[in-house]
Every structure is written in C-alpha cells, then in structure tokens.
Length: 446
Ligand SMILES: *[C@@H]1O[C@H](CO)[C@@H](O)[C@H](O)[C@H]1NC(C)=O
Ligand SMILES: *[C@@H]1O[C@H](CO)[C@@H](O)[C@H](O)[C@H]1NC(C)=O
Ligand SMILES: *[C@@H]1O[C@H](CO)[C@@H](O)[C@H](O)[C@H]1NC(C)=O
Ligand SMILES: *[C@@H]1O[C@H](CO)[C@@H](O)[C@H](O)[C@H]1NC(C)=O
Ligand SMILES: *[C@@H]1O[C@H](CO)[C@@H](O)[C@H](O)[C@H]1NC(C)=O
Image (cartoon, rainbow, N blue to C red):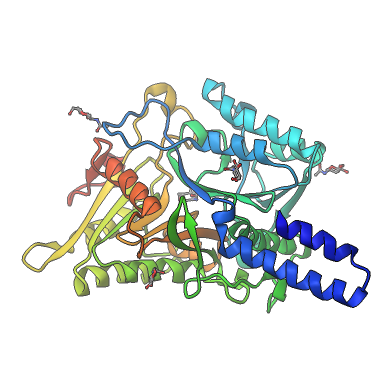
C-alpha cells in the first residue's frame, strides 16, 4: 500500500525527469517486494482432488474438491480468467447422458458463462474435430474469447494442458479436464495456488504462448523475450508456501514451446527422479516406455531408464501406481511387469508396481470414459511434481503439457510434499490397488 501511494505521488510530481526515474525505481521495488517477500500477501497452496462417486477410503487423508476450487477461483475473479484446456464436455447434453452427477460440471459452465459477460475470459483449447462444441459456443456467445490451437498441424500432438490463471494472481493446475466426469466420476488431482502473482504471471506466459500459436498457426523460433522466464529448475522462485520455505517453478512441453529460461517438462521430471534419495512415488494413468500415437510406434525409455538407474545406483525405493480400466493399452502390462521384476532384497533393488482400479456399479459402467484414476503426479522425499501429461513419449515430444514443481528439501515442515505423499500412500494401501502379477493379462485384470 505504501509503495502504491509513493508511486501515485511520483506520478504527480512536477519535475518530469525525477517523476520517470522515481516511477521506474518504485515499479521495480514493487515487483521485487511482491515476488520475493510474499509475507506481505500470504501465498496459499492447496492440493485438490476429485474422488469418484461411491469411492471410500479407510483413511483420514482427504483433500478439498476440484469443484470447490474452481468455484472459489471464479468467485475471486475480478479482472481476468484464462483457461488452457484439452476439450469441453461439462454437461449431460455433451455426453448424451442423464447423470445427476453432471450437475457440478453444469454449474461450472453456468458460472463461467456469467463471468464471461462481466470480465475478460480467454479460453485456449485444442482444435479437435468431432469433440462437442456446445460449451465453447455458449461461452463465446456469452462474451468469452475462445481460441483453438491446432497442435496437430503444429507438432502432430494435442493441447493437453489443463490450467487456470485468475486475475494474474491465482492458479489451478492438474489432471482434470473441462469435463463433468472429471468432477464426480474420474479420479483427479491438482493444485491451487492463491495470492501468488509471480507464479501466476509465469503460468500466464505459457498461456500467452498457446494464445499466440493459436492465432498465428506457427511456432516462433526463437520466442520473443516477453515469453522468457527467470524461474526454472536451476533458479526456482523462492517463497514461503503456507509459511513453509519452498522453491517452485513451472515446466512446459513440448520443447519447441519453451521460451528462454523455461525447463522442458521431461527435463524437470528426470531431474526430480535424479534428485530423490529415499523414495520415488509415481501415480499416473498411463506409463509406457514407448510412444503411443506416432506411426510407427517407437521405443522411448528416457523415464524408464532413469527409474531403473535410481533403483540400482542409489538404492532408491520406487513405487508406481498405474491405472487399470478397459481402455488401458494392452502393451502397457508387459512393460510394467518388466519394471516390477527389478525387485530383489539381496541386491537391494526395491521397485514395486501396482494397478489402481476405480470400482463401478452397472450404472456407473455405462458412463462413457469414466471411472478411472487420471492422476499425473510424482512425490519424492524432497519434491512434489504435479503434472498434466500421461507418461509416454508423445506427451513430452509433441504434446503441450505443463507441471508445477514444489521443492521443499530444506524445509523442516514440508507441507505440500507430505500431503502428496499421504495421498499416494492412501491409494497405494487401499483395496482399490493390486500388485502387477506375472501371468496376468490386462484384458482380464482391468
Ligand atoms: C463468437 O461470438 C461472436 C460474437 O461475439 C460471433 O461473431 C462469432 O461468430 C462467434 N463464434 C463462434 C465460433 O461461435
Ligand atoms: C489473499 O490474501 C488476502 C490478504 O491476506 C486475503 O484476504 C485473501 O483471502 C487471500 N485470497 C485467497 C484466495 O486466499
Ligand atoms: C531442491 O532444492 C535443493 C536445494 O534446496 C537442490 O539442491 C535440489 O537440486 C532441488 N531439487 C530439484 C529436483 O530441483
Ligand atoms: C491419457 O491417456 C489416455 C489413454 O490413452 C487418453 O484417453 C487420455 O486422453 C490421455 N490424456 C489425458 C486426458 O490424460
Ligand atoms: C477398508 O477396510 C475394510 C476392512 O479391513 C476392507 O474390507 C476394505 O476393503 C477397505 N477398503 C479400502 C478401500 O481399502
């Protein structure tokens, strides 16, 4: 407030030269103060989850819902809302269903349409043919600015990122799509960070990159300096999160979308694995040491090799919790069995793989593409990594995704890391997960 008043005084000052130099100094101070002394405005991070209807854990670990977080973000919005998204199916109409559990998605759409008439709402969405357009049309007609990004033409990938930036101050990032099922029928995990303009402006740069390629249909090379960032794996943003000293940065994929200073998502993921000393817990929907969508498909073992290396060279305990549902790629199982066989007490090799199944009654089974664990995160003894990508080659080579990396290594009370670890352990130890068995065939298991 004092800085704001001084800035105003400087603006009113008679001498033009002193006015300009004072303003520059004050604006600089303001940026530095806000970014590096966030005690002035406490930064709050909250892990949020969607737990599919009917699932019950024997555990006290629970997180606020993603639905609550989205509603909160919309109610906080005063000046802008920017959303990066894969596709939009927030209503029963979009999915030709009659599910009472679509009401949360429908409410999100309604509120967002109301906001679109009041303040600038921008939506970057992958340009996929055949996906429902009704929500986007409603939002556009309500005043939102919708831009499609033709990733297929640009990189042969898709825009798979899912994040929100509100008032350049608050952010959400995580696995949930703009899909009613992501709120009540699919298991999701994300993070919301409130009152963090430094991180929000950084995520905004990733959004602006989508916005630019959406409008121009080509990828700039090099990216203009306005897309560059100071925050990456080597020089993260240092700040207290929930009063805990933390260092944080955002990574992005594919590499061609990374402006100067930005850590590519794959590098960030590998560096987190490499940095672990005790354990690496990974919960992802798909895990494949291959590409899934290239023709021909390719073997791609960057992550797999790093995990085996950590288990062998540093004796790190590795746990993978992978999703099991009727659409799981069958070739995933032999590769998971291969990884799970790197387990031998005499040689101190400790790798375990479990499959997680979201149960479904006959009515829930009838909901298309639902009842699955869609999580995409990793937690080590030091770091929490919350991403938006499946773990197979395509997602790092040509698909747009991003991740939030929170490092609490030197903190006596690593809140985010320990909460994420508790979530992983709840799922790992629940009756919904089972070890990968040697003879098993995915068709029979999932
Ligand atoms: C979006 O809304 C504008 C009016 O605000 C309209 O001119 C345009 O045709 C709409 N676009 C689509 C794709 O519906
Ligand atoms: C942001 O910080 C202000 C000032 O401490 C606080 O009043 C507000 O509730 C915070 N916003 C959120 C969304 O936590
Ligand atoms: C986490 O921070 C410590 C220093 O506080 C650093 O040595 C380490 O490399 C960081 N880890 C990652 C994965 O960035
Ligand atoms: C992840 O992989 C699954 C199965 O291949 C696919 O349906 C999904 O669209 C991918 N991306 C998301 C949304 O996580
Ligand atoms: C909860 O505990 C009961 C009793 O041990 C067990 O039968 C059930 O499968 C457990 N549920 C989960 C989700 O772990």
